[in-house]
Length: 520
Image 1: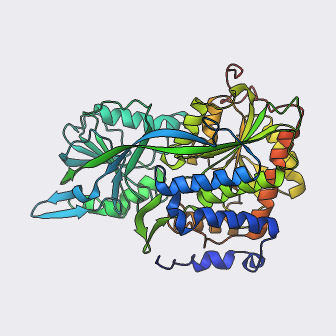
Image 2: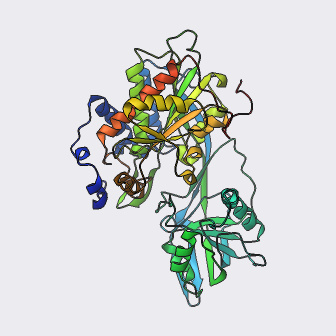
Image 3: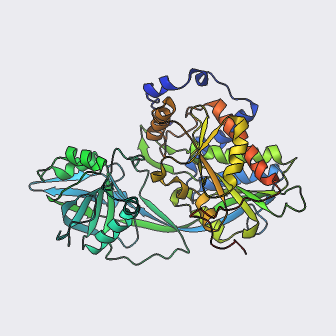
């Protein structure tokens, strides 16, 4: 039995508009949620990439597409395109991390307080004195050779926008050249999108075709929660409270020795895995336009079983992203008897949570000609938990899709906005970005809100308590009116693009515009 879930904070619940608390879904929205429950229920075990549970979910989706009359678009006449991957896991039972202080040892705990992205060439034991180096670019003359560099995860506020955007890369390069044996980054608890603790697991998955660089001398790269970081400063004469306050504000931070040693013991396991994308086509009705495709995409994978949160260790992934695979199933069912002019290419990807791997494999091994994919409408990061009046559109400055989106949104009374939080990098963190890489215009959406509004409070609360946690399950609160409204909007948008006599065009002003027309 799974433990009962801790309810949403009372403040957010009180701010939820009262009609939403007594809503009932209409028939179409109820059918969408039935599909969501089938994919996000406990029996699907969180659909982790490379597991038997994910295979069951993929078979379920393929069966739904087949029953709607969609044609297979995978390999060898099937609905599946297998994606070969390599997985490296931290063996937490044989790994440890501890602070060595005069006369005592303070253990830290992997996944609860500290994590890393494991690789196969990790040294079994790393020991070094700790030095705090501000935001991570060592001051001139700082001796880090054989030591562990500790830094606060932010950037100084007085940098130019260009220097802000390149700071992380410059920091990585400087630390790699410093002679440090390891780096330990302290989470910024006031970041717009703080890391979610506990970590579900410490795992690295790559495509098997991705070269695994030999990096025996590269420093280990670990991260520590803001709370646990207080243990690092006890001998330093400096206050973690001051570091958190000044670091969150981007104010100057000093460099100083922490006067303690960190000892890290690591063990890993590895294996090759494979997991399928599910690909299907609803053929278009217009002989001239049907060879072209509007791609409709979402990811099927979740995190599976992981570190327990509130006694629950099953990361069901209901809104991320089972509910939007469910929407594509319902779109297929609703349109198969009256298809639009262009064909619809349904792309259900694996390995998104591992680094957009399924969509990367698909766009590198296309099962339809690249030149014939006119657009991708990706579904991810959607939270129908408050009234839908605003949608943030990723890709809004890239192509003529933005005009189509605004036209379709108008009768729904949905305001379309650019991303007001570009630092979250949502554009590049979802499967749509792999379509951009091959020159396909995209549109993706996030439920929007005004700063300081009740909707923002609800969103932030959901994000803190449920996102990438077991609490993103079928008991998550849903605004049924907002969910149905978005589902209808998305379907109308897909039809508008698929029925348009002209295909979307990149804007010359877009920094993501391909330099040459896509061709194959």
